[in-house]
Length: 347
Image 1 (cartoon, rainbow, N blue to C red):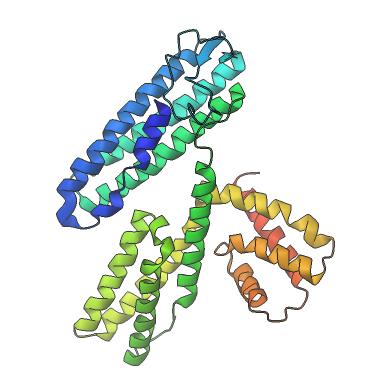
Image 2 (image 1 turned 180 degrees about the vertical axis):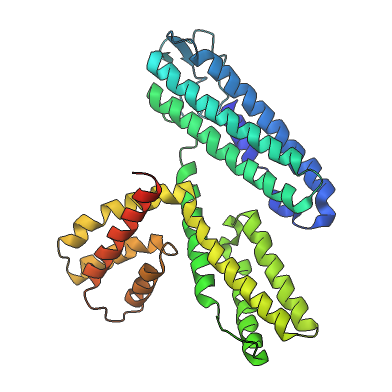
């Protein structure tokens, strides 16, 4: 049931309902379907939770071997019925408590996602965002629960590439945001020519972002923001092109570009970045030749968008420009970023 619920959530795509005139279809084809999927998942979580409570050893049946491609995508069987020999795993006291804790957290997250959908029912954009958030939350939470059970029972969870795909998408979007931020022309004053120039560059940058192959990975809240900014620029250019309004629009674009740095707060990127930052310093400190240093620079490219100083240094290195003490400078930046991540996570 958990695998089925997760796969059901993956097939629901609210991004096809961006326009307000499709709000009725959004409710019928996305929101209602997501609520049903959440209810189904909550039922499966409650069933698993009832098996893992009580502290006594509980038999957990998996319907088929997860590692067998013919059975790994099947639904779970009756969790309380003794399974055939070979697929029995005993949940001891600690294991039962751990599974119970994960079930509780997943249930809370899913119920919260359902409440947000219901609260946004009459508001198109809020409902879009709530539906996308719920879809992502279902996939993430159910994958975490399946992973927890698999780890504790010595199995391999079905669909184990979910986290890798999620991280790869987040890295691509962060890189896209960094490019957009770097393209913004910043200025001060009300010079009409400077405003027109800044907005012309912004319009091009927005078109590049929206037309990017990675735009499909952009979350709906950010996608709507990009489309809104693009629409505002077009309306400004087709109207009176009033400098004061143009300057306000430029400031809004700059603010939006800076706010996109919040992508670094995503849990999947925090984990990815911490692991990468921890693995780099020992090699950089050992004194690398140029070829080996280029390999490390290539690995650090996955951090583009995390830090402006690192981005500038990587851009120079990729452009083939000579950079004095590149290894030492990278080591200092990596150490600073690793420290910031540890501090942010309370480590």
